[in-house]
Image 1: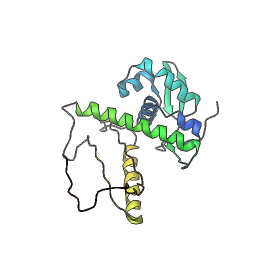
Image 2 (image 1 turned 120 degrees about the vertical axis):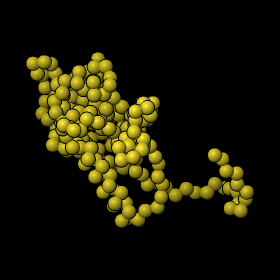
Image 3 (image 1 turned 60 degrees about the horizontal axis):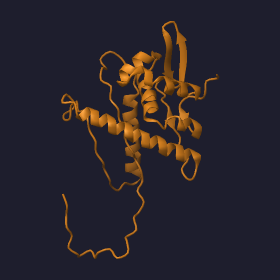
Image 4 (image 1 turned 45 degrees about the vertical axis):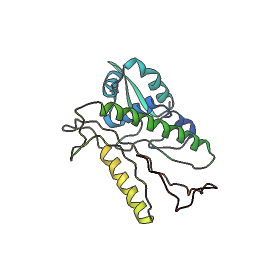
Length: 204
């Protein structure tokens, strides 16, 4: 099978292959390892049984999102992107097949993040403060102009650059970073809303 174009993914059929938390984890882990690895090593990094990965690996390989090779010790896999150029989705907003597929992937990303966070916060050894903090969930909401939005995108790109560096001695901690940046639509006040001077009850 001819190797498909690396990096950006725009085709809805390819994007749908990632609408599974397990497949997102597989691709993320392969990209973090940066080389061909056995199913056993992949499973160990993911904390999952190897038997549960074979089906997903076959689907990802058939779809061209990962590369499979047959070695003397068995099948090995790596992501199709190389040299730090990780797979990324290209969006086509609107009523498009691409947008529907992207929405499914975004939902799966958030499910993976939720599960990872729950596991980590249950571990007393997780660092939750100081410069080595590794566990953090937050939501921010505010007004930005073109300059601030450009800075936000630059900072997010820098964060991804840090995570895309290949594994090397001294880098023994595997972390995951998930986020959603989205514009918010102006909300229309409901008819019959209470006047602004009405007494309000604050709940905590």
